[in-house]
Length: 183
Picture 1 (spheres, rainbow, N blue to C red):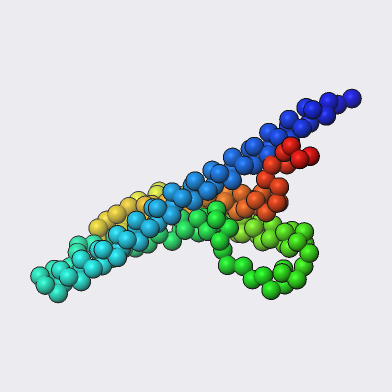
Picture 2 (cartoon, helix red, strand yellow):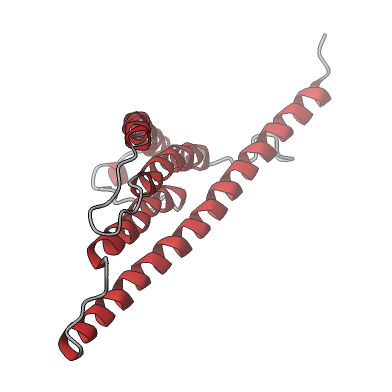
């Protein structure tokens, strides 16, 4: 015979873990958006500086293309994970608005699951490519920046997107605390 009180404690622990995972995904998303915004601001400022220097002194910012490309990598890929963590990807709700809430929720969960699978497959694929780039010691053309620095945001952004999509699935269940007092 099982003690129903122990089962409630176990379920409460699962709810706490789910809530912790959701909070962690949100915190990671907050950090990623700060990094992405800083990189985007850096790109804008360097571009303005480059234009000013070219038109006044006749000298460009050295390595502008390499720096811009690197900063763009750190702008784009973390934002994918951020959008997953905020459940902010574009959604077409024409059909789901006409469905019962439970069916729409299941479809949303399947969408997040599909996103997690796609990002997971891409993450594994780019991890393999990043390992090759690391092994070959490839560098950028102008400033000789190690190309692995360009691949780090791709790999981490996609891997974090998998985690954030998983947290979106948990958030979509509509009951973030399955062991709560209302049971």
